[in-house]
Amino acid sequence: MKKLAVIGNPISHSLSPSIHSIFAKTLGIDIQYDAVEIETKGFEDRLASLFSEGYSGLNVTLPLKEQAFALAKKHTETCSATQSANTLWKENGVLCADSTDGAGLMEDLIFKGLNIKGSNIVVLGAGGSSKAILPSLLKAEPKEVIILNRTIAKAINLAEIYNNDKVKVSAGSLIEELPFESDGLINTTSAGLLGQELIHPKNLFNLNSWSYDLSYGEETTKFNELAKKNNVSRVHDGLGMLFRQAALSFKIWTDLKPDVEEAMKIFRI
Ligand code: ATR
Image 1 (tube, rainbow, N blue to C red):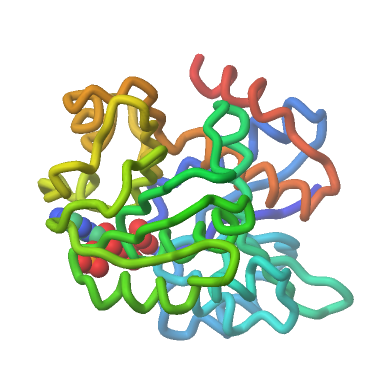
Image 2: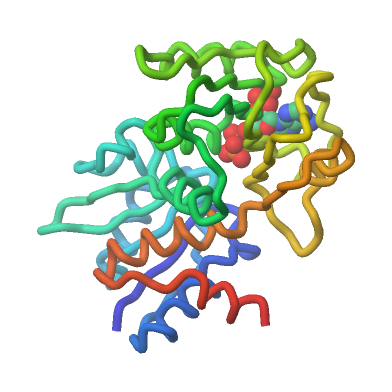
């Protein structure tokens, strides 16, 4: 039986144990998937002991993603681009890392029929989640991406890293007007989760754009409520991304690809 876990702090509210258990059930395999709270201090030793206790795969969440990246000896291309890791495993004793959040988001956007290629995309937020999705987003060749952040220096920093010949990536504050009409909005900020208001440019929303909030919950997220109030009709939360990034991790550890739609149906019952 495979022993797997999600590690982070806090960890008790993580949905990963339920999601991975559903994947295993639908695929007819036996796994143990735990939620393990880990401090940033002493992380390297704790990681080594988890592998020696028989864990063969780990999901990594806040605040350990960057540390996990730094400790891994082998990284996928996306993982190197994001400089953070959400999936760890060992190959011939070597600690390997991937970052499946961006690919999970892209799979979910495609599934929902939301087009990136040739589109003007607004990414709100320049923290860890934003960094994790930007490389995958740019690979899908949008026309332009603007990163808006409360602390503009962080948005400028990301724009400088990711601007390239194929896709113009720029930065802005939350109060300036957008330089284009947006086709899609991706909210990566934690404002809603923190119960805080999100200041936004006057022309952020338009009738024809869609909105994707990386947050999720039983009710419509605060950002999607705001989008709906501003007449955006296609609003989506990040539950699909959560399942799809999990499925990509599960595939790395087991070589089996879960049926995400079926798993989501079971999860909702
Ligand atoms: P995560 O890993 O979830 O991205 P993070 O790295 O702490 O978490 O990033 C949180 C993001 O939400 C940041 O972009 C943050 O903006 P700042 O860089 O200015 O802190 C953004 N954020 C949090 N609360 C916000 C609020 N009330 N209004 C606007 N942006 C907010």
